[in-house]
Amino acid sequence: SQQGEEDPQALSIQEGENATMNCSYKTSINNLQWYRQNSGRGLVHLILIRSNEREKHSGRLRVTLDTSKKSSSLLITASRAADTASYFCATDLGMRFGAGTRLTVKP
Amino acid sequence: DAGVIQSPRHEVTEMGQEVTLRCKPISGHNSLFWYRQTMMRGLELLIYFNNNVPIDDSGMPEDRFSAKMPNASFSTLKIQPSEPRDSAVYFCASSAQGRRWTEQFFGPGTRLTVL
Image (cartoon, rainbow over all chains, first blue to last red):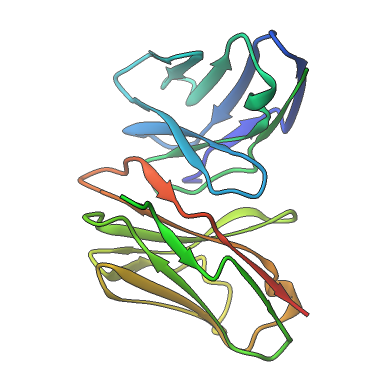
């Protein structure tokens, strides 16, 4: 499959807690991207990590990539209610998306 | 830049009617994607163009769907005839694709309802 598969499907946490979601893929990649989708809107690119990178940070976001396990994780630290959204990963091999992880951050 | 522009934002039509969705990609981007999103099937890639040429249309559900990109600044997705199961949000995205896929910029989507 050329698409990433996110896990878990849904995640509910309290504001201030950390949220971790995972992505698995099946073939070798050159880069992997994470996107966020707020309800009813288009996807917004969050971060891109290349295959030769193991970890990348952007503000409260931390992305890791393990090419040997063909997996990536997205960590959102100190979550806020505004982080409530669906999160998707996609690889550079076809830009197809999985079902996403629906994150709910309760105030 | 105004970002990716889609029109209309909402479309309600009756079964059997022709529907045309429009997209203007970001200036300078050479790749354009059409996606469909429903609760049941998630976000599906329908077709993508590179330099105005359709590269992969394997996601186009059936012959009722067609997409064109007559120039670098405009694309259409047409459904003829439309059916209730075509009801979905249709997104257009563009990317400045070099040798590898990079960041995609999504439009706001067109919410299509077929009665």
